[in-house]
Image (cartoon, rainbow, N blue to C red; front, side, top):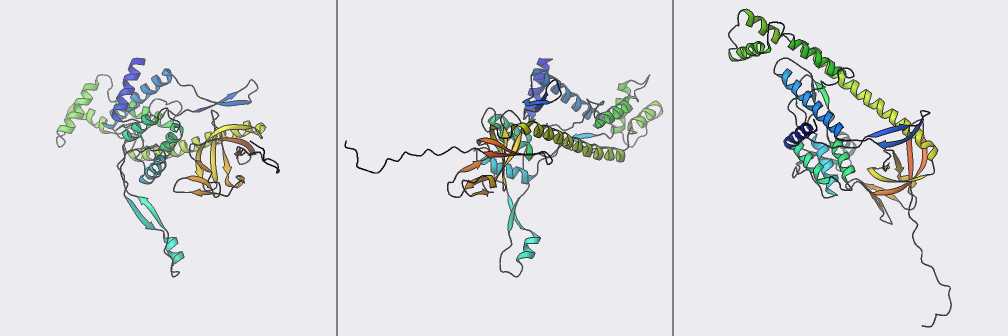
Length: 389
């Protein structure tokens, strides 16, 4: 099974499937049910084995149903050009690129800015919008392999993931970009996921046509005849079989409604899970106000930067207002916070030592403060006669 899983994994990689393999947080509890900490989830060959078999089964079922009846698919569309452009700009600061080449840019003026500057003599502000960009999953895969084991791997993998669209369910098969799969669905978990249950019902409806005395090869032969002679009506048993095959177990409009509702429900479930995790993390950090930790800057904004504590998957904001030793401003073109006088710079991927400054349990927010190193002062000698050499 291990050998087969590795063969399937190599097959996916050859076609360009992306595998970020990002660590996931696991909350640990003590005997009293209280949170003890947040650790990195363990991952070994057993996880890889199940994952590869699951992906293979999902693709197999999707391809089987696509050739026969309307079905439900798990699709992942190509990333937006704007997201790819933003990632390329950030990755370039580390010397990396997806290899998409020069991105065509179109400059546009917002209607609101045009109205605001009308008659004032000032030119309306222009924003840059990247045009369609040719990006493939193999580009992501190659960059993932290139940054593996580097200090910036955590940040760039996170940014690459953010540049991609969210996967969703659809009755129209548009392929799965991240998996580099032409047909993909969710089939392996019908006891916990509604789309999987729908796929089982569709699959049973198709297989039901292969009833007692109707082998699968007869059904396939009927389909082949229908495709070969579309204007010729089959007779007898072939007609009955062909009609049953062409009759979809679930109508297309109903599949559309199921896909929309399932996608929205998945978003709500993910948001609920994130809120629970944030609540648990805030509760865990309440007794640690005043303690200091090592962290990594994972995001920089105009109001501050977010720091994730090492090996704890707990993040918090360092507001610009707390950086009192200088006047700091956000530079959007480089995504950096720079001090006006000291030129001290805070950038994505920088390692910092932070203090847990404040906890807001209602908003589930954690605020950090940067612990700056004290400058080394030179001892001044008292005024007087110079020492003879």
